[in-house]
Length: 202
Image 1 (cartoon, one colour):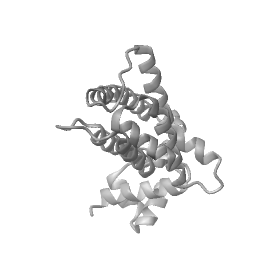
Image 2 (cartoon, helix red, strand yellow):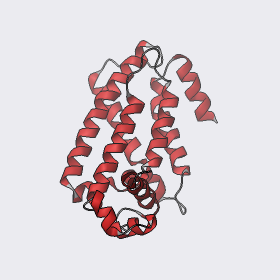
Image 3 (cartoon, helix red, strand yellow):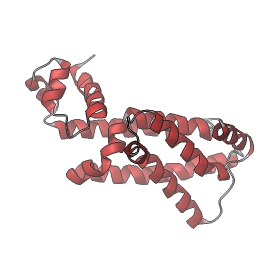
Image 4 (spheres, one colour):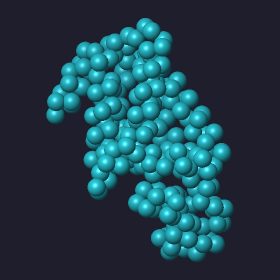
């Protein structure tokens, strides 16, 4: 594995375990058993690493959301894949507010990401309606409200649930999935509705 890739993977691990503020480039270099100079050959500072990781997270997110030929995956599986990705990059969802206050470039990238997610959500929802997996929401204001509520919940659930946990962990992801499924459940249809009801009863 190339050093640049190892830097990113090590950074994800350290940021997730200790938080971005507590981790320095020296910590990352020490964890990799390389010199700080070797790390700086690839990245000038920690902020560059964070930006690169954000781009990677966005790319992986869009791969989950991308259009596929044939029938799309069911909404419950879609939620599960997204929450696994949230957990992989959990430091972003724990600390995004403070990170983007410190970095204007990251703040702009986050804003663009949210706007793209809103558009992708509408495209995917309309596809689910055509496939009989969701009911049609004709009121534009209601659609916007639902989209914003779902996205707001999905991107902030870790902050909320972990703040109440003595030992924060992946249990917060499971709680987040159930809450998001409960929000989406009234708008499901057909087999999707049955799957959601079974999941929520479990």
